[in-house]
Image (cartoon, rainbow, N blue to C red; front, top):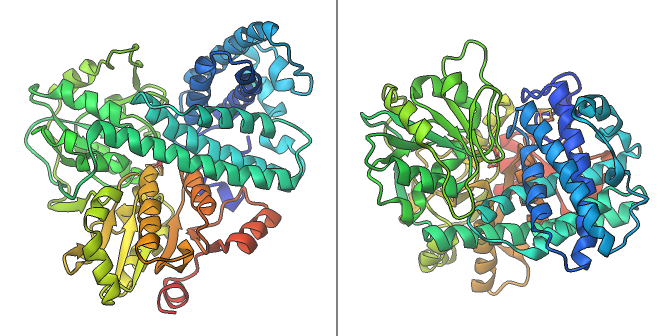
Length: 546
Ligand code: FS2
Ligand code: SF4
């Protein structure tokens, strides 16, 4: 196997024997085959769109296939094999349809590959990413692929809420087709990378509109981090449609619902506040789940990543459920909703009723809900604070958390920031500082949490609005410093989106991506000022106190 798509890539280079995430050689190979088959579908789909055909089945397949290969989303080999089989069937159906719209696919072996399930694993070594020999071309192709995976995740959540944007689907198929070719120049791939960022902005805007039109605009909310006395279900991941249905189905059952990790921002939406049994948030970022699921006592539902495969000694393995693109061997998978219907969470609810209530691991409240609409409602206060000098700088510390000890940097950085700075955050990165007592500036909390990683879009909207209010020409003239933590591929699309919006000098850590070749890293450094982190002391001096 060779995989270097996330921040934990072994030795800062790539996982070769087994993934640090827990993905083994067989699963990594199956995912390579799924990506290969998906590229074949995208090549055909890209052409079919020119023939005004109905491409929705292929569009939706592509979203799920890419999403299921994101780090920590799906560890279930059978589920990945099943997707390959369905992908090959879909590819054949699409090829039949092209008879009315003849196209030549000769240069794409992804379109003609013939495989039976017993051949999937042995075929994998012939389609791994190292098959692309040119290091820079490989780097750019994978940068685009990881951006597309992140975009697929966000478009998938929007689709679950009935929101779609044909231009995003067209771009995804075209981009997958482009990276499937052997004749790409570095310049063409650099252009494609920036275009991926453009569609990243569109994808996050689509999801933002879908979320807010269904559930209202996030508003300032205090979230309980203690526990109640009823048994509970812990819901993790990012999918708001899933939590909507779970909250409705648990209402009046005597089972409470708690959010975990990236689901915390569900509390900020007005639509979910009516539920008395929506008790609070349990635990911290994803990587602490091995301890926190033990003490939660009840079932855990993963709607997306980040799953950590339980160890053989874990007592909670039989309490894990997955749904959507998420998967874990041994866990019960909740089937997709039929069109117009709901998912059926009754098996989890019945399981919860037999469990003890969660054990308290902390007490108190955290505050969040500072997405663009809420921050704009406070705009006068914020602008005044900037004008009077009460706020000197905003520091965007969005992105992901992870288990690497070097990430202690982010807690220390937040603690060391001067009292006239405000942290703008989104994503699970926030758990490094959202429980610190950082106080407020004239009533504005010093940590403003916009929501999930996709709500980084909100931070961009806020920046663009501030640029307008202050009458600036360039977003980079704002007193905003970017110190972003990344882990998986959704952070890649967020980064590409920020680059597309013209944001320069982004600090990226705790390590730069292994998939950036030295030359590609140089392009990012020279054109966008991307910079790695060093020590808290140095970065404070160079980025904040300069
Ligand atoms: Fe955190 Fe994991 Fe949000 Fe990522 S819970 S690293 O999926 O997308 O952020
Ligand atoms: Fe390694 Fe990350 Fe790939 Fe897992 S997803 S195999 S940790 S690079």
